[in-house]
Length: 149
Image (cartoon, rainbow, N blue to C red; front, side, top):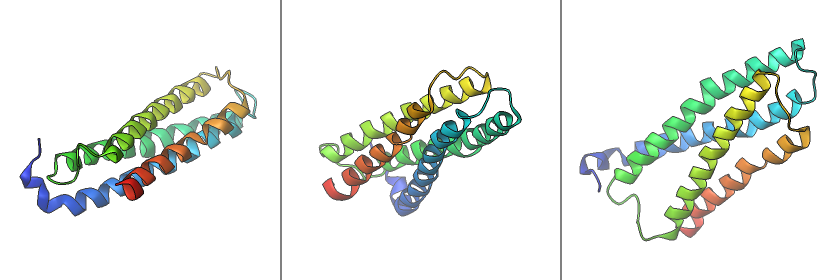
């Protein structure tokens, strides 16, 4: 199903989708890095309180709105005539990667709550490795859209 009324706005939808996705990626690159540093300091310390504020603001004020905007604009693009070839493999690859990115976003939110409650049980190395997940997914998404398409 497509909505012909969206066709004149295609380029704006696409531009805003890319902007929202870029903001979302920036937040997902930085949030696990904050967890790496937060995991190095004692729970209950002044520094820990500062990290809690930084993590909350990054997640609530940047990452969550950017993810929502990415999804809303992506859905509008899907509803725009000619934007998606449902039989093309790139589309399904991108969709799966975006679902995985959303799952990673949810994991980051859970990890933030653990730090907030001084209940982090994961080592610094875990967050260093987790910090690479958004990069891998970004590479998959960009190659699917730009090269495979």
